[in-house]
Image (cartoon, rainbow, N blue to C red; front, side, top):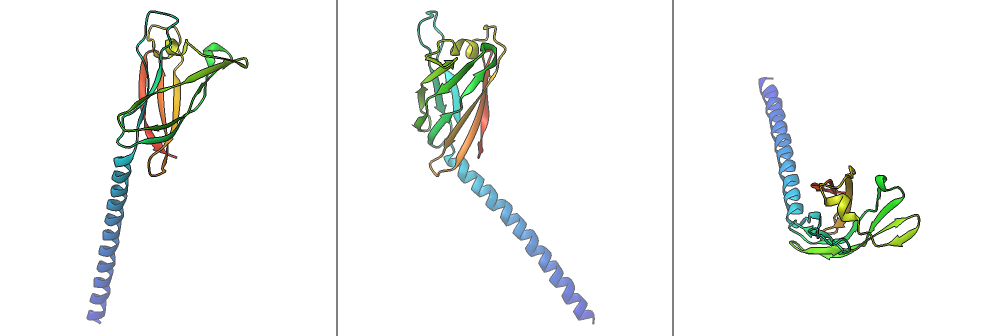
Length: 169
């Protein structure tokens, strides 16, 4: 009788040990997968070139890959500027940005179905002295070299940048 109870106690303790080991091993595996993804994950920064005093000179919009891996099939979602009425911005897609690389992103805007290049984008977005109070959420969608899809949100406006984290989608 005593040996039967002792056997049940030992089996129960063995079960708890195996259960604890399984939990710890799962946690370590998840962390290893996370570290592996981070080792190839791109991270994109939405920036603009320096301003010039010449009103007609075009300033550029750039994406810089500050992550460790290459970004592919990059798109920036269109957005609407509420202070400018019926004004929508569209950015051209980018095929590939390697780690540490910066690329120029072409953009256009539409107002009342009229297409033209916009020279005012840089002013309201990146000039802290501009009177616009609008802060844009720039949503960037991209893939890493392993085919994992990400979305990253950068907030820009009033001369400030907020570089958001890349999240799996």
